[in-house]
View 1 (cartoon, rainbow, N blue to C red):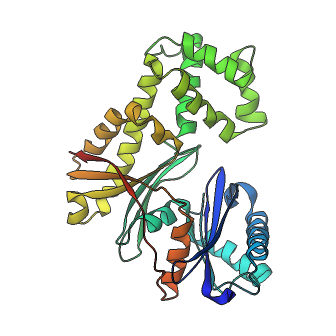
View 2: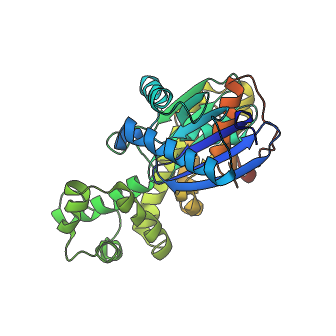
Length: 332
């Protein structure tokens, strides 16, 4: 097969990444997965080397020889254009044999590109959180996505940290918890294998592990979704996520204000019933002009969006069906 007719798409999340090969006719040559890709955490050279080795491995597996037409990437943390150019330049200089052209954006943007032909928005609530709007003219607008030190409101990490803080603040007598902490503290100690709450400081500071902390959220959603404190914090998380969408709606046109297409990405959305009331509250806040939101899920890899975006950059169009599923319609 002719390598110069094939596009690669990469979606690199904080925890997991996906790669696919596709040509202009929409024919797919394979899909692969590996761990997360984030140059903010691992550095440009490490991420670039991992991407290059991954693509070379995939090319060998399907029998492709020579550079691909292009690689379109959407990576977690790829929010700064100057930094994005640095990674692309590194790939061109050190790994120019893998493709003729490169494009880099955030993982959220490629998810929108994989979902909507004429633009739309995405709200990511996984380990971290972010909201991005990709318009029909390819312009991108963002809210959040600044990591756990500044943002990540409504994310799994944010929820887990809030629950832990309720335990510490209640027992310190600093701020009373809005609901009893007994069940959450028991789950917290057991989940992290601790004898007392101070043991969590090693994971929070000495050997910081964001994904491990965030994973506590899925555990409490499964084991304690009827607990008043869990429901309280998840509602607040929903409001945080709704506020992200309300904020980005400053950039909506009238058609989007009438009915905004919004893609849901990330494990936190599995707890929709816990988030819903707060999410709607956030959407309606601060004089919001949004009249309706249609929530969608994407049943396939967002990596497709990377391939679509880089093909568009080259003046090409990949013939493929963008398969989204309507999750719920919110009339506001």
